[in-house]
Length: 65
Image (cartoon, rainbow, N blue to C red; front, side, top):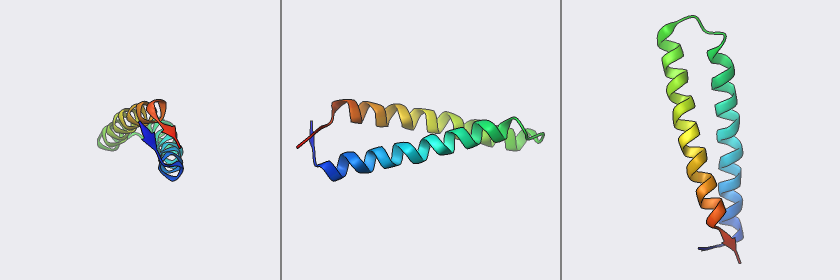
């Protein structure tokens, strides 16, 4: 699929941000003792992982013009 360069760059920017979020949630999960907070962080890890997979799929199909 053809994307404008700015669209590809925006997806790359979102990918970088979600990678940071994923790293932070995974790291903080190890320091938290409250089970409810651990569950929230795990949900964020799961969501971020799924979103990063979607971004990877979009970027792999992208052909900027």
